[in-house]
Image (cartoon, rainbow, N blue to C red; front, side, top):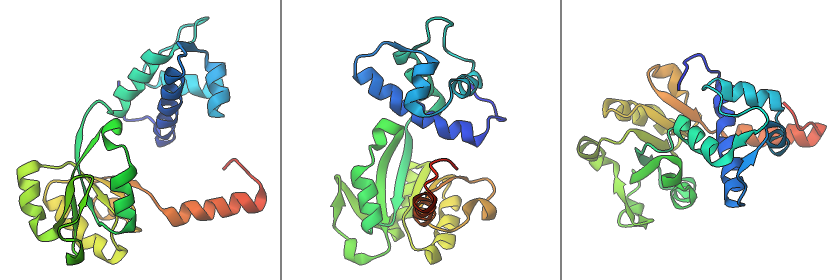
Length: 213
């Protein structure tokens, strides 16, 4: 069930629920109460119930939640069962680390292509995928129709590359640049990952000892 009015803060908590439920299922647990779940998540039981009620609610009073069933429901909500064909642009250190270590298939994505404008990467492979030239990207997208792009490129290159990707039919971006895709392309779906912002947040928390923002 999807509701366009669901807040982004609720959506951002769902992966945490999914991750904890996966760990609990692997540990052999069958069910858990909202109170027990709240302790593990550092979120109030009331908040958990409110979040899940946005999608219909899945617990039973006096029983709690069936861990396996709730995990599957959240996986379905997050679209993990659907496979989004994905390409990665930028095969530098960050791009190679992401291509190597992110478990794409477990998270609803299939990495099908890696691209870079630097000819030094020509002929190299990452997890059995060749690093290809940007010149071959249009033909590849026409044949394979990827839906998502991961951007690990310099900020100055982002406007031109995003414009090209939008023309090629890609609308979903995992964006590691500082380029504001959403403002320039309102139809794009964007998840920004700003490592500098994250590190500055850690600096604040370290300075003031505040664990809640």
